[in-house]
Image 1 (cartoon, helix red, strand yellow):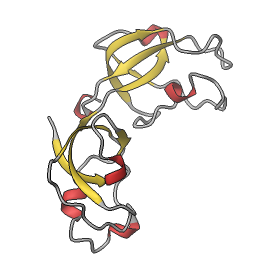
Image 2 (cartoon, one colour; image 1 turned 135 degrees about the horizontal axis):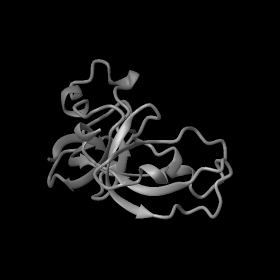
Image 3 (spheres, helix red, strand yellow; image 1 turned 60 degrees about the vertical axis):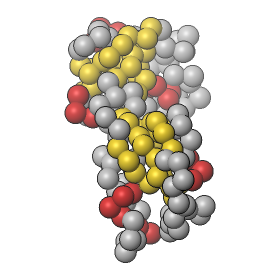
Image 4 (cartoon, helix red, strand yellow; image 1 turned 120 degrees about the vertical axis):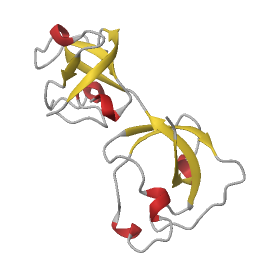
Length: 151
């Protein structure tokens, strides 16, 4: 289900994904608050359409202003314990990883997720991008459900 919201014009391209971070200090007193602050904090979203002929509105956060777009919750790719990697089941992340140079790091600590939560697995993608886990974890790359209500 798509939601109409306002985002920075530099981000307003179909396919752009972002994690909604909530209200910034500069949002206080803005006349467009209700149109901007209507997403779920911490949820990952994908822009599905940019409203044609929408005005660019001044914004205290986005230097080039904001415009109207439609967004939907986006799926999250993540590494989970291989023993928990089944489509339809729920799994959580294994925990923080200090190896930021690892090709799997973005999937071990994916944006839009929390370590103390479980998420429904929509699809098992397969092997993670790393050859060897420095923490000796047996991991499988999965796609968590896009809808926050499925968490």
